[in-house]
Length: 136
Image: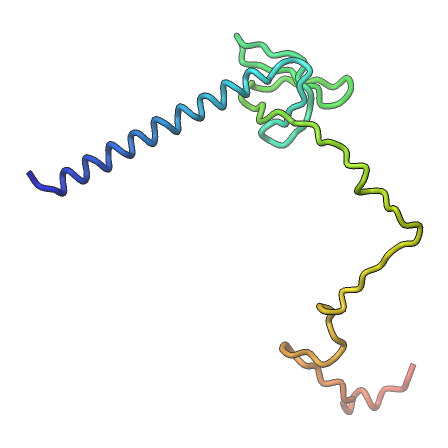
């Protein structure tokens, strides 16, 4: 028996095992997501629209999502992309302890007002046509 066939068989077996693990993990994630999808849950649809689940009809694969107060849309259940987790408010970032504003200048990385090191240099000397024009 040739070793090449053994190596190919082992590689095929490893590939099948990884595919099996991957599909099982995706199935578990999908089941966990379905458990979170109940009425009143804020969600983002797969096409980027945010809303709140009003009702889910499992037998018809339809979900009713409220996208604005009084505006309910019907979408396919698979378009419910993810549950939107509330972002905790960070009040400390908006308040400062100092009464005077503090400014930090970025002098180390500031662009100097000298000639450019590279690029197109424009000749600013007046041409004969520019010299003939009266000053406005």
